[in-house]
Length: 248
Image (cartoon, rainbow, N blue to C red; front, side):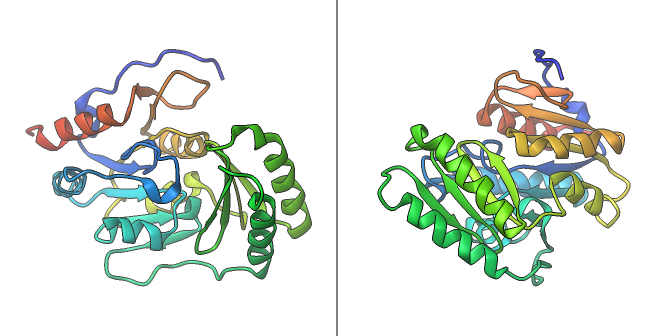
């Protein structure tokens, strides 16, 4: 993949879209800690308006768990959590695999690693666990080696993100989430558009393109399967607001 400066997406791209939105780094700025994220008062009203405009074809596809996404206020939206391992419709119980005993063992190992390393944080999720080193980037190599060792030991997948190593069951990603949701109402029949910022969103971009749509990368230019780009979270919100307000 070549690093190219992609053009911004035209507002008309959202006409007839089945819209898939990443959360951290896309709808809200990445925070220093997982629980430090700030949505702002305008985000949820904007998403409600846009969902109405798209006749329901809007989903949040995140590495966050369904439980966390609901705690953040997204309970009324179609959700795919933990990188496509969990799904939930508004008001319904999440469809998710059980938490494995091996994830608990990994969590204990992560805590032991982080205990004497200020800035290294462990994030417990419903069916996975993350090791964050944003506050201590010097520990990246050691954290990665630990994650790889534990993944091999317990037959788990390593999900690499921005200043994060997450261990989880394999068999799903954001691309498989897009493919699954595109087969069901309300997304079926729409043109998939995936907006995301991280390398974990690349599978989402690929799935959107494979289904006749496009990916939109948020952030600086890098090697990507996306077709368009937006510079930052503020630009994403402005773009979505234009899409919500456009006339037929």
